[in-house]
Image (cartoon, rainbow, N blue to C red):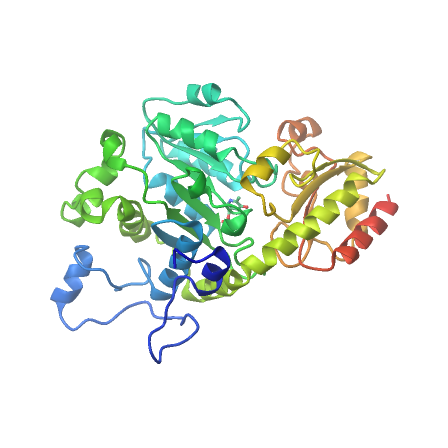
Length: 427
Ligand SMILES: *Cc1c(COP(=O)(O)O)cnc(C)c1O
């Protein structure tokens, strides 16, 4: 499939049925798989043969869909997880353990920020956060001898900053560690971070990939290009024997292409069990089949909404990298030439009260803690997700009281703009 364009991979990647086999990816709704001899099954447990024995580790439906996402990202191997949170945790915990250190962009999803700053800190993994717009020297200064990876988001949720992937990759590689990029917002239709030097890509498939608000899920794709052996002392989990599998060495047995994902499946999926269900993987695949058709429409609607808001007297400011005046417009032209995403954020004049009045009067855009859905939705973080914060804290967190985040769906842009216009009139 690697020779095909992204549109073809969205539709046909990952699964090629043989003669008389189902045309659509079958839902293999089975926890377990049958073997004739213990010897046959033993080979699977020793990682001597590949195959299925228990769906906590691997299931064919999930593997077909993971293979599609891997092809779409241009990676070497991939896996599905139960959520985007699980994907980011696994991608990082697969190479960073107690006593290790991570450098991450400050401009990331709130759930990932908590994962790093609270939960992984309790596990003995420290994170230093860096401004994504900082210079190479400033980002470099955050590294320590025990740093194991650099992390960022292509388009950050909800800040909508655009990551300079090449800059981040250069710094990570200069320190002998991989760059992990959460590519949830643009999807591989808009940007393929591996082409710009990222080593591992993660997704919350809950967002545009599913696209219909139907199933929580995540994915991890490994480029297979990071040379773990060249920095073997930093990554003993991949380059020294795993006693829980009779002393195999992942990089020796599975090569650079297979080591990361095999270890992640064999150890982390085995022990944490953050498995995506075959039903969810099936729904995810339906979303992927139309992703390349839906993304341009999300972007077109968001661009029209952003332009309308930008020219409106009751709107103070608009964040959308598709606007020529946006701080991230130049980076977006480089990394996201075909459009960024459907999410726009803006401030209404009149603060929190004006934002509340505006949202109350919207008819099409529902108030939801969700983005990247076929249906337009919006959120005022100050009165919902961040309501425990004072106005000063909200400003420091980059979500001032008047900020509204709007995820533009697939409706008519004229209808969306008319809805926004009447709600602004109500302020
Ligand atoms: C939503 C989101 C996540 C978390 O994904 P879940 O599927 O909700 O667990 C991670 N990263 C980004 C950028 C997200 O938008």
